[in-house]
Image (cartoon, rainbow, N blue to C red):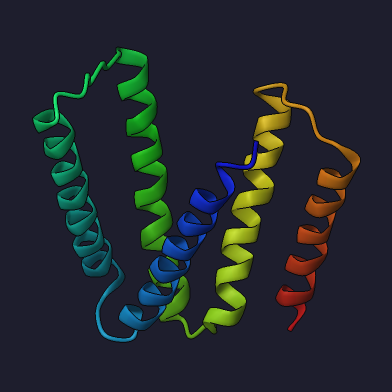
Length: 142
């Protein structure tokens, strides 16, 4: 049942690296340059993965709605990358900026899941989201 958890934790590790390296890079280059380099590397990685799947004979079924939604996700992450570079360029510590950005994104995604997708939420999960709100508030206050 929890076979997704190790993969989710590995994803969290990758996102931690993403935010950590943006923080370091923001000290050395303009946000737009950093975002473009990041996107080019990510596109290259995605293209390599796609070629690997194709060479393995995996079916790669695509649909118009799927492509459109993926493009919207790309637009969202591209803007998030640029804004993350800008936030860190302004000197926000990684220990504050990253939890606010990531916690805020988790909270907003959960709200979208509840409102738009009509997903359910257990009391424990609602409590976890409440703790995210409290944590963001404490971090923002300094």
